Image (cartoon, rainbow, N blue to C red; front, side):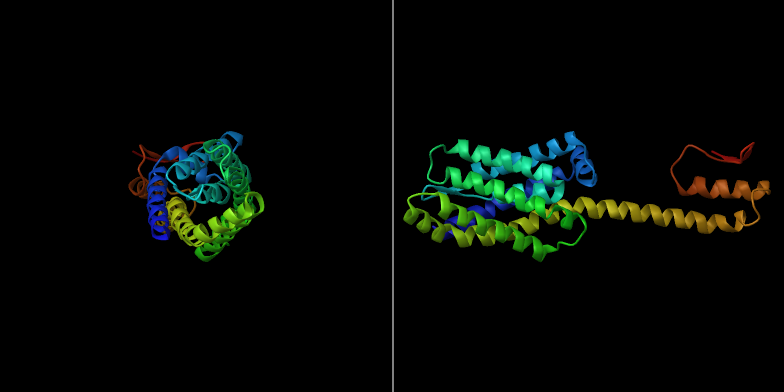
Length: 259
């Protein structure tokens, strides 16, 4: 059974990474992730996206002694880290309610729903630290592991009979803690590509601006009085960027035009 759980979790993580990769190529999702001050509609959208990921994780889990061995923690924690507290708790509510309704009256239905809410709180609590770049792969691994340990504790506290809960935790704790923690690191790094690519684009624009400034500076040292210098500057800008035309003006007249 443990080998089956490890393999199932590995497949589920692979599926989530595939979903994450596809999402990073959706312009709408990229804008939401890059916007540090999303409006309410943006927060709701992120909650729905990661809530749906949590639901997928529940459906793809494998049953074990009345529980579902799954990767739901990844979607909920990622919502909090990437989207902020509102997105994190929204995804937790969606994932937790679905988990309860998925197996109403089940041995771990209530405890797993509650633990999903707790995981949302944990992800939300570390959101600011993550966005400040103060949370590396090791930190993400430890936070996810702590969230899964909390889930095991909640199962022991809520699920009854206690002996059955204890037997379940002994069976699923190690696979879920280790695999989900590793999976979370890979999942977050997949989304981090969005930020890396954005930084690369910004760096490219900065290099372009500096190159234009360096080439134009000899023509601008004399001020805006030389028509030849202004035309040369306009030509430099026109050849450096994709645009229909370049115009240099002062407050009264056009000094140079190219295009």
